[in-house]
Length: 462
Ligand SMILES: NC(=O)c1ccc[n+]([C@@H]2O[C@H](COP(=O)([O-])OP(=O)(O)OC[C@H]3O[C@@H](n4cnc5c(N)ncnc54)[C@H](O)[C@@H]3O)[C@@H](O)[C@H]2O)c1
Image (tube, rainbow, N blue to C red; front, side):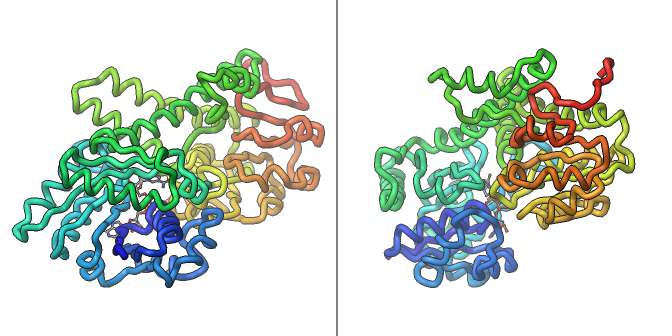
C-alpha cells in the first residue's frame, strides 16, 4: 500500500483523486484542503462541485481508501510517499506581472508546508497548471533543506474538462508525466506511470522532460481557446455577409486536417483556465524576449472579449438602443453546461455589460446560481437570482441564452412567449435553440453567426 496525499480539494484535486482511489484500492488516498467547509461537503452527499457522475465515484471509495481532511496536515504529509499538489494558481492581481502571470503564493506556501512536515523522501507532483520551470523553484525550496531529504518533483498536468471530468479521467486521451532525466527522476516517473497504468492503457501515458510537460499544458489550453476565438471571429463576418457559421464550421470541419471539434461559435469561452493559462503563456513569451509570439497568443483573449462585448452591443442595438429598466432573463450563469463553475463565465461578462445599460436582470441556472452570486461581487445586489426559467422570463422583454444547458433547449417556449412583453427577443449565445420554431412562436431571434429572424424590419443604420 502506498500512501498518497493530494493538497487542494477543488475541481481538479477532488475528482482526480476520486478516480485514482476507485482504480487503485490498494493505495490509501487523502485529499487535504484548508477550506473546512469544502472538506465537510466532500464528506457529505452534497459535494462542493457539480460534476456528472462524481458523487457515484466518490461514494464507492470514500471511507475505504479515499479520505477528505481539513486537519492533521503534519501527519498526512509525513506519512505520504507521493504528494499531488493541486492548489489554485490564479492570475496575479498585484505587483510585477499583475494581470498576466500566475500568482504562486498558494503554491509556494504548499512547498514550504511539505518541507516543514516531512521526515522522509517524497515524490512531489505538480498537478496545478504552472509557468514553465516552476518545478525548478519548487525543487530549490524543497531540496535546500537541512534534513538531508530528497524530493523528486514531477509534472503531471491535468487535462480534464469540467462538465465531463469523470469521463475524461476514466478514459483520458493521454496522461502526461514529466520528470528529470536522472536515475531518481526516471524512477519517480515510473512510479507514477505504474499508478495510472492501473486503468489507463500504457500507450496513452506519455513521459517527457519536466519543462515540456509544464509547457504542454499551457499550449494545449492555448490551442483549444484559439479554435474558439477563430470560429467566433468568423461568426462576426458571417453576420455581416449572410454566411451561416454552422454551415461554415461543418464544411471546414469535414477536412480531416482541421477536424470537427471545438468549432462551435458562441458568446465566448470561459472557465478558470483558458484565459489564465494564455496570459501565463503571453507573459512567459514576453519575459523570454518574444514579443511577436506573445502578441499572437494575446489576440485569442482579445477576440474573446470582443465577442462578449459584441453580444451586448447587438442586444442594445436590436432592442431599440435602450435596455434601461427592461427585464431581461439570462438563461445560464455557468461558463459551460454541466458544471456549477462560473469563473470567467461569458454569462457574467454579458451580465455586467447589460447592467451598465441599466437593464433589470433575472439570472437563471440549474446549478450555478450560488457561485454566480459570489463571482458577480457588488453587482450581485442588482441581479435577481431565479432557478425557475418560467418565472425568470415572466414579464421579460428578452431572453439571452448564455450557457448550453440541455434543459434550456427543451423548455415550453410557447408558454414563455405568452408571459413576455411584446415584441419579445431571444438572443441565443450558444446556438442551441430551434430558431425557426422560435420565430414561428413569435420571438425575434438572434443567433451567433447567422442572420436574425425578425417580425419587423431592422433599422437600416444597424
Ligand atoms: N478547473 C479545471 O478544469 C482545471 C483543469 C486542469 C487544470 N487545472 C489547474 O489545476 C489547479 C487547481 O484548479 P482547481 O480548478 O481545482 O482550483 P480550485 O480553486 O477549485 O481548488 C484549489 C483548492 O486548493 C485549496 N488550497 C489553496 N491553498 C492551499 C493550501 N496551502 N493547502 C491546502 N489547500 C489549499 C483551495 O482551498 C481550493 O479548494 C489550477 O492550477 C488550475 O489551473 C484546473
